[in-house]
Image (cartoon, rainbow, N blue to C red; front, top):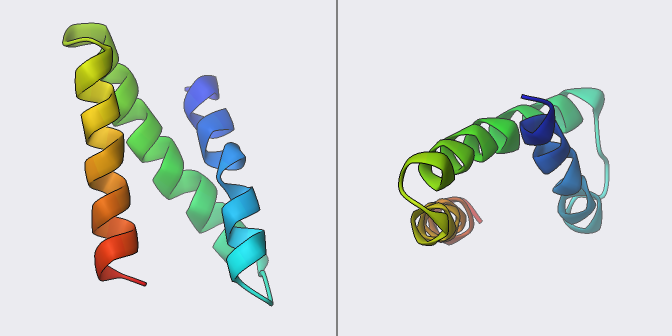
Length: 69
């Protein structure tokens, strides 16, 4: 769980570079949603291997950046 939160915190730099006014709610949302993806990728890595975790991360990025930006 701690690693997933660190994974979420690691994505804050992208938020600060894209959004001009960063609110506490946006910070919590970014950490939470990326932590959820981190847990999913960690589970896939544990059960299936690195390739599946990488693919899940890529698919998550495509969905988020491709459809919501």
